[in-house]
Length: 94
Image (cartoon, rainbow, N blue to C red; front, side):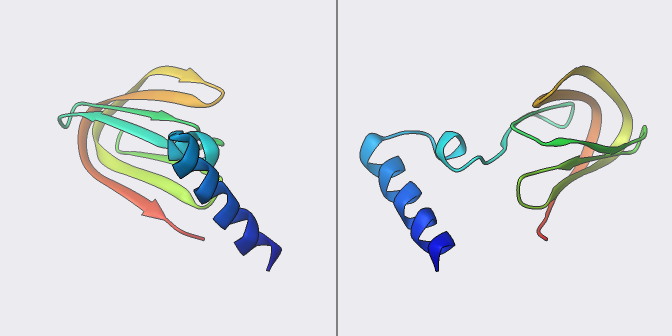
């Protein structure tokens, strides 16, 4: 019950103050440039990485990116820039 109330309050505050939802609700921000770059902000950590797959932990669930020739160009505590041929971006809910 308290979780639903908090979520409603966050949604209301976000809409009234015109703040981005990713800031108020701790959501990931994903920016893709074609099929060659993907930039993810506000993740909780790297779970797996290979030249064909990247899996990130999110506050709620995981983000799975599949493709080919992956290279991590930048990795920071809450940001990552991935290059390669991106075929799929999947959100896995817990």
